[in-house]
Length: 290
Image: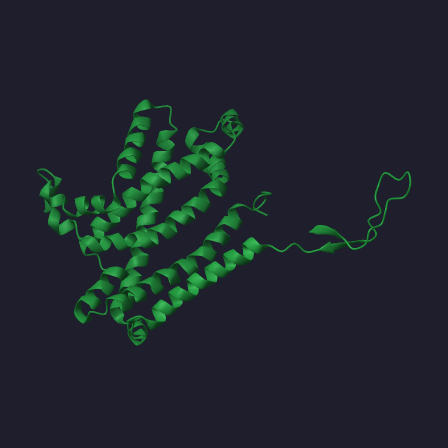
C-alpha cells in the first residue's frame, strides 16, 4: 500500500507531525506480476495449441488408457516401487546406524556403500545385475547346492536389486540426517537409564527422527515411481515398457507416451496427499508441524 495526498493540508503550527486525515490509501499496481502472468498464460496457450493441432490422435489415447497390457504395467510399476523402496529403507536404516557406529570397520563399509551406489548411474547398476551371469555363472554353496545365475536373475529380480540397493544408499543419508537432528542429550539420557544403543535407537531416537526423515523419504518414494521406468532396458514389464511394446506394433508413439504420462501423473497425484498426511502425523506436537 502507498499513501497519496488528495489535498494539501499544512501541519499545525508547532506540531511536529503532519495531518494525515486528508490522505487516501491507493493500492499499488504490480506490473511485474501482470507481465509474468501474461507470459506464462501465453506459453501455456501455445503449448496447448501445439498439442491440439499436432498429429495426435486423442481417440487412441482414450482407447489404450485402460487396455490390459497398460494396466498390468501399472500394477508392476507399483509393485516394484513398493518392494524396492522397502528394501531401500531397510538397507538405509542399517547403513545409517553403521555410519554412526564407533566401530571404524562398520563406518568404512557404510561410507564405501554410499560412495559406490550413489556414484554410478542407476541404469548401469540395472545392467550389471541383469548380466551378473557373465561374472558368476552359478550361485550357491559349493558342494551343497548351486543354481544357474540366468535362472535366478530375472528382469524382476535384477530390477528389484538394482533399484532397491541404489535407493538404500540415498536413504542411509536421509536416515543419518534424521538421527543427527535428535539432540545429543537424548542419547545420554537413554544411556543414563541403562538402555543399550539399539534400545535407545528403537524407543527414543528413531521415533523423534521420523519427523525429519519422512518428508525427504516421501519424495524418494515418489521418485522411485518414476525411476522404475529405467527397468524397461532390462525388459521388466512396467508401464513404459508395455507402452513401448504397443507403439512398436501400431506406430502410435506419442499417443502411447501420453498414456504412460497420464498414469505416472495419476499415481503421483494419489501419493502426494498421502505423504502430506504422513508428515502431519509424525509432526504432531511440533510447532513447525502445525
